[in-house]
Figure 1 (tube, rainbow, N blue to C red):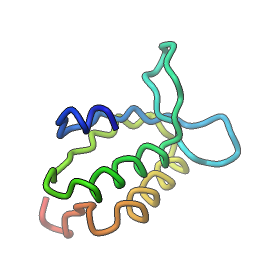
Figure 2: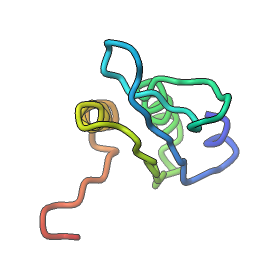
Figure 3: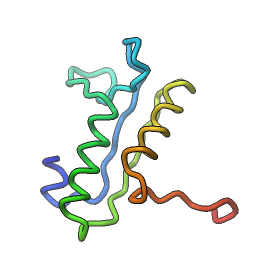
Figure 4: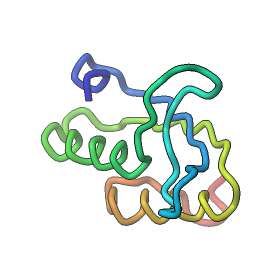
Length: 95
């Protein structure tokens, strides 16, 4: 939230498989001593910020993805369900 409050418009989110049974990816800077934060908590924080500050759009989420396919599916579901209409998904053929 601090980065968004300081005016950042692009957030790099390093995503890794978790070692838990929840299938919720973890966000941390790999191979360093940093805190691990669940992916869904990060996305919920972004959503709360967007709801409170809609004039700040767009916000770009740069996902550095180190996750296996099952965790990638969880990430996609989390993004779609949490961000809803605030998530831009190009229509087929637009890219």
